[in-house]
Length: 166
Image 1: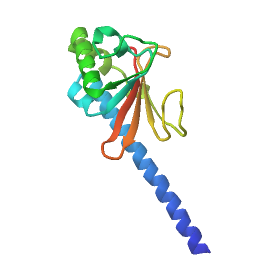
Image 2 (image 1 turned 135 degrees about the horizontal axis):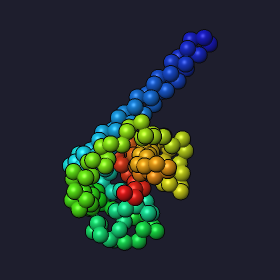
Image 3 (image 1 turned 180 degrees about the horizontal axis):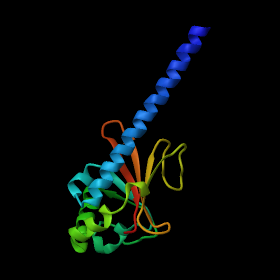
Image 4 (image 1 turned 30 degrees about the vertical axis):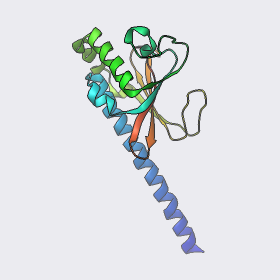
């Protein structure tokens, strides 16, 4: 009986340790993604996104000026191809100017970035159990950007949705 209890305890500790490693890996990946965003490195950003990404209602890239196919209605979520999303970011960075972009985003302190793991699925946000939400507070008050990461078997942690209003 005692041996069974010890084995069960070791399995539980191993499972918790595995979850901790996976969560640390997710946060590290999210930080690398944010570093790429802050330096306007769209090539590094691209590898951090899933093949298809949901732009949540209200997101900046839903504006027609960024030329993402089927965008234009900021009141609805839109599933977009990674290649189209990155092209929209390239246009946005180009129009703002890379120097100005990097000046704005590189000064955001990582202490103002919050990481949370979904304990359950949430239909409203689209989060699944285990997803990581990265919230980047961009100014005084509650101005923030939201990025949702999910772990895929082949590709690891990738951004699957974002709610951004730059």
